[in-house]
Image (cartoon, rainbow, N blue to C red; front, side, top):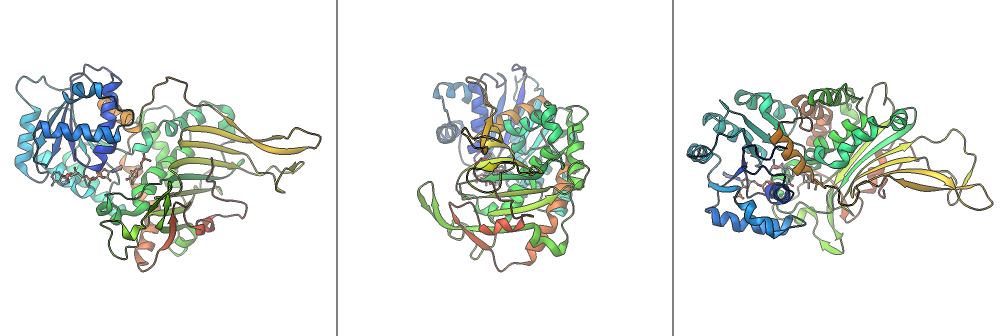
Amino acid sequence: MDNQCICQFVIFGATGDLASKKLLPALYHLECAGMMPKEMRILAFGRRPWDNNGWQDFLREQLETYAGNYHPEHFDDFCKHFEYVRGEIHEKESYEKLRAALTEEGADKPASTIFYLAIRPADFVPVVQQLSGAGFNQEGDYRIVIEKPFGEDLESAMRLNEQLHRHFREEQIYRIDHYLGKEIVQNLMVYRFANLAVEALWNRNYIDHVQITVAESGGIESRAGYYDQAGALRDMLQNHLMQILTLVAMEPPPCMEADALRDEKVKVLRSIRPIPKSAVTAYAMRAQYGPGVVDGKHVPGYQDEAGVETNSITETYVAAKFYIDNWRWRGVPFYLRTGKRLENKTSSVALRFRHTPQQLFRETSIEKIEPNWILLSLEPESLKTEIQIKEPGLEMRVRPVQLNASYRKEGEQELDAYEALLLDVMEGDKALFIRFDEVEWAWRVVDPIIKAWGRETDYILTYPAGSWGPDEAARIMDKEDQYWRNKI
Ligand SMILES: NC(=O)C1=CN([C@@H]2O[C@H](COP(=O)(O)OP(=O)(O)OC[C@H]3O[C@@H](n4cnc5c(N)ncnc54)[C@H](OP(=O)(O)O)[C@@H]3O)[C@@H](O)[C@H]2O)C=CC1
Ligand SMILES: O=C1O[C@H](COP(=O)(O)O)[C@@H](O)[C@H](O)[C@H]1O
């Protein structure tokens, strides 16, 4: 990236959870790596009664807490990029103040101004309206980055999109899903489309089923206000897991341009078999964590978390299956699950092959030989293939071994998802951002589940914190020999 380009960055919600845990550390790491444009100005917009010094104290504290690998020697240079703008997102005067800060006398005309909406989804439209009212959608290169979830169901997502388009053109809108910035998620495309041997097997003739897991050991922390309304289906499955599914399932695009990729992803979403209203329980299940032990510590159940409504039935765990009714995947179930307060923080894509047509050998422990697996782990990063080999000795017994495509060479650059995506916004590269039809079709896929669960409001299954979720999650599997793969 041309690090001399003049770019301005405004963070709405600069004091929030996302900013503290992800955005500020990502910007800091870019600074440390020398990848932050030198002239870049960052306006931290917040309502707290601070001046620049107050902001800098906050910034230091957040980086010390959340920027793993924090190198204090870069802090002073990093601070030079920032200015704190005290304001209220609903007040017109705050945007006048913002304009004054953005167009300071003596400041060169910026190549682009990026507004990052790290605020509650309910505040997206009011902020966009204010920005437009203040003329930030006219002359000049203005971009807005919108966080997920984009809407809370199909209808609200359509409304939100329509309201955004009243003020900004599609090319100005960056719908972010940070899972697309994760190295191994991008590697899915390289692994598939740069290796003929892999691609040849990547279809219904060889693959029995696919599992996509995003497990978190953390709870909801201070986010009850948002999470208790959203739940795991809206917070994670509709966006992050569904995006991973599209990358696993899509056809090779004609080229790597943003729209070529997104066209292929949309085709996948459109091919997902609609879940019949009457069969939602066969396709999806939800649960909520109770008290338990995570990383050796006792933790409260969801019901006892600060800010959660009494008797809330919000799901903190969801497992669902989808069928992609196209030439490549018909009949292959895609099992997706995600949850909070699970045993480990780990995310993976696991493809299990079909059984060999004939069993010629004996396995060491159980009767049946386990089919092969392709195992991609997002966290910790790894890419493995599990195959059977002969156990040394006189008998023709087999045992599984994992071939590990060692992922990162020592000293090789490590870019976190937000670091990669922030650079993309600065460069105007939208390949890893979501087009509205992707959002729309992902909502269409999960809407029958949302509707069915919306009607059942008096009970939710629980699982102990620190477990792998409810045993009942196995019931959505099609065959007896299919099971959730926890260890990758
Ligand atoms: N947190 C996460 O891990 C992730 C969050 N997201 C998404 O990011 C977005 C932000 O989430 P998150 O950071 O968790 O939310 P928070 O509630 O933690 O942050 C909201 C921010 O908005 C500010 N704010 C609220 N009202 C006003 C107001 N009237 N005027 C000025 N500022 C205001 C808050 O200021 P104050 O601090 O003063 O209250 C705070 O900085 C959401 O869309 C979420 O879905 C996406 C991925 C991960
Ligand atoms: O979008 C979200 O993602 C985080 C998990 O992100 P990760 O990169 O740490 O895996 C999740 O905790 C949060 O609830 C959700 O809003």
